Image (tube, rainbow, N blue to C red; front, side):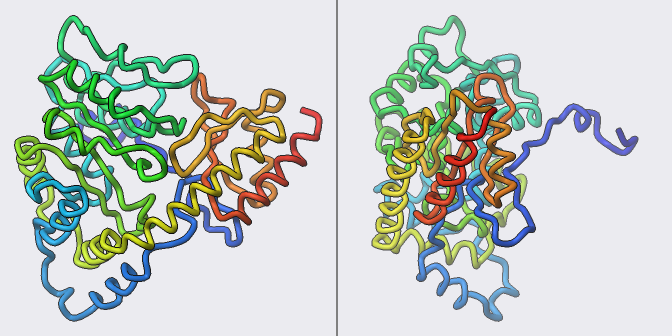
Length: 359
């Protein structure tokens, strides 16, 4: 511990992202990146934007992006708050909506691990709510509480399980907790789930978080946004403008708007991922894996006869990266990104060979 640190720094446990290897020719199925790349219109927008105008600051309100998102989902621009990736939007959500003294934030015990990191950073007590034995979120576990929590947050589809709640279940949670924010992190929603944005008008405590990193294939540009009531967005903007008035640069804004507007490319590429996910699930099951029902661009699978860490290590030796979590209840699972059909075929062939070996 350095004498120059603030007191709370030593107690932080930073989030560990998926490995970004420097080795070439690896099949990278560990960080849920899109296999097909951004919309050509987004790439053209970046090229067009790389001009002398970059000497000027970007629009601090990202107006054209807020308008594009609002038009896509049928909400008002004042209900949209863009940020530097959905992680920054989440940070502002934690800061603006969940700091209520000793009241705990409720979240699943198995979910996106950044939530616990932010709780530490912003000194927010957390209460972990166990998933069911089948790894689903049970709405009843978030209802009938003796005292109101600081808020509720969960990913839908959940990470790393890939399982999703229906809108009726999300609405049940929100209506059962009308005086606190219910944050639905929808990083993977476009791969088979339904967005809770449609619930905001009748459940004004719902906050929906989206990213351009997954289904829009712009992970390298760092663009995300939240959609909520005007009242909630006003609070988020107060925090944002107390931290960084210019979170999105000109190129990121241009690329995101173009990607949002290119609906045909988005739908075509999303459909390819869905088809490959079904193929990957069938192939994994055929070699003995148990695969959770996924609504994301990844699958979560375990083999009852083989240790997950050893399988991950064996795949890496063959130039294939997947994600293994050394955490209770899920340490025998592999999270596998849906890549191209060729990537998934090589993965399954390699796993077939590994599972034939003695363990």
